[in-house]
Image (cartoon, rainbow, N blue to C red; front, side):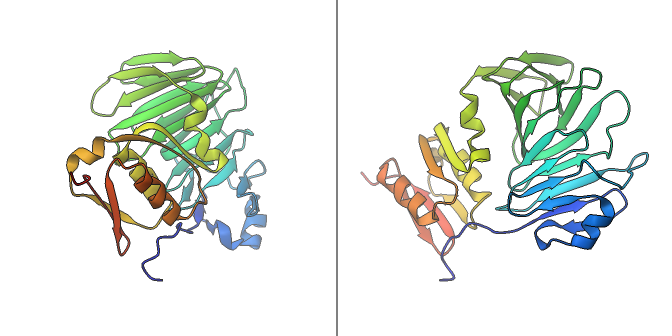
Length: 273
């Protein structure tokens, strides 16, 4: 069925500082052995603790995930970074100097190894987050006007321009890319980390945001025939390996709007009076 909407099954690429490119899911064992990279395709984990390639000044390594793909990477300091779909992580090889600095695009969950002498700094969409050792999530997709940092444990400093806030567990900073405004919310952090456990979990979320998130995992487009439908809020809690037909059925059963499919395009419109 050419019109069936399935989960996208693309891969991940690791581009090392010397220009070596690894297509992760293909294995590329010899290249991995030469570079000191260990890849477990079963658990989708890449270990760089024995990385042999030296970045040198101004050089970096980049891990990129495609649509429908996620991967975990253990960085040279032992920190775990879990990349969601369509995300990238840029980092040096050994975190030399007085800090450990990475750059993020997309969504990444971090479990940072504590090092009181070298803060872990994440740059994302012009926003910086600074930690010593903690668990937190960064959502910084380029098409969004906001960078969202959600703290699970420890403490997290979020810097937006000349202003900064310090988060406690179950707090979230919503930072505007257009100015230096930052809104701090109290949330259930586990809701925002459910994707790392293989679940779609939304609570009182805008329909447009839900579809945008689903589109990063499934091969479909969508269109709103009535703009007010974008603001409809709803919840969703389904395993991320659910069939898309099941998701459509669940949304239809909510009876908040009309949703249909033409080819691989999902159409949303108001319910008829």
